[in-house]
Length: 293
Ligand code: GLN
Image (tube, rainbow, N blue to C red; front, side):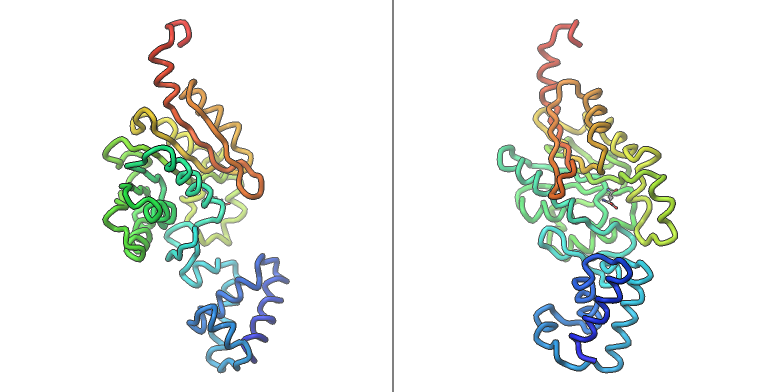
């Protein structure tokens, strides 16, 4: 069997099992089985696979058919044009979270961001992408999971940012030692009721997805704390799940009645990132009459 035939055959099987992007996934699995680059794969399409190579490839395809994500099988995931190491100790970075990075970099064009805290960093993809684009910025990256931080450490070393991304274990903002210019977070926001039916097939850490009974519990927990770590002029950027815009913006309004809130949709048109600048609240509150408070 040639590489091309193996790809075609595996693609049909994955697609027949409702796996999206079947060709791309098969390419990643075949490259992993043969330990070759994408260019090599395409140059060698008409080469024959050895029986050993064939066996290795079909073993990977079988794992994929058992719902194991390709990123965990290969140990790699691309995010914001960078290659990250991933394993089941941390959530696999999602393409929609690139919007958080883009929004933060947009802010950085008009506001100096000397310090950033990323809360719930997981494999470190967001903190490291920011560190590479903002070479002057000091970044704290926290996670409640020590195991996830071990994965983040591998990625900080891989991308040479170990001196600027400070990995801290702890809940939410607790381990962040000083006020920062930007707090950024992709917290768990999946409703518990939506997680339960998927659990037998789950390979990712539940802790990284579980947003409590209404999905926004972790987000609310962080919002209640941000005032202690955001100086005037600071920003909060949050990734949210589909349908959570109203609940989260309303909650933020109760905490920061005069804060400026913006919502950014992702490429599918789903409201995905909420930006809060509490500056208005502090400024206006200072000037407000007692009756307005
Ligand atoms: N977007 C992820 C998913 O759909 C959820 C990520 C999160 O909870 N922050 O699985």
